[in-house]
Length: 220
Image 1 (cartoon, rainbow, N blue to C red):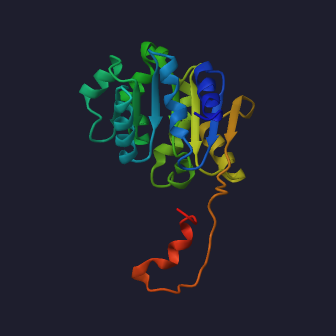
Image 2: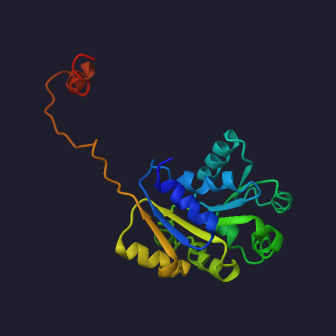
Image 3: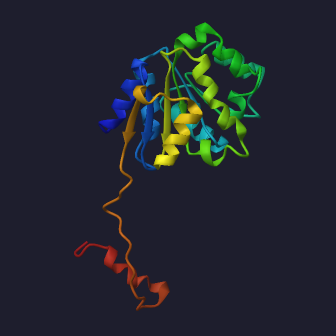
């Protein structure tokens, strides 16, 4: 891992800071919230994700690492699955905001279970730009600030996103009731110095691909 990734994981394990992590796609944000599971063998991570597909991908990736995970959405939010979660069958719960914020729902009951809370490392809000961009038609995103009233101070909140503007950080911290003096900001540049835009005139027939020869190093 890169140095910034263990730094995020350490903050989550300490539980004394909220973390705002900004990094480009492919830089390894996901690793930051799985790493704590390696250091706390009885720990549980809860991840709020906007898309069912992302939940399934995370479950598959964790299975390869030997970590039991479950994706909770409208199809899988069954009493049997929540019973399994409450009995610590899974170490990672990937859940949609709708299921997390369902009034009187099974997840709300989990958050009131002190035994479950004692195993919880942090709650991760992945792809957090959805709070501001999707809140109009998925209002549960705007309700996630409720978490700060029900979670003990020892449970960290990790917010991840790809890009960050001043207005975005203002909106997100306001929605989630994050405290500026308690928030660790990890901001990785999205600059890709090895990528540049090049415009060239096509000289050869397209089906020969000869115009792309410049991409192959000389003598390769």
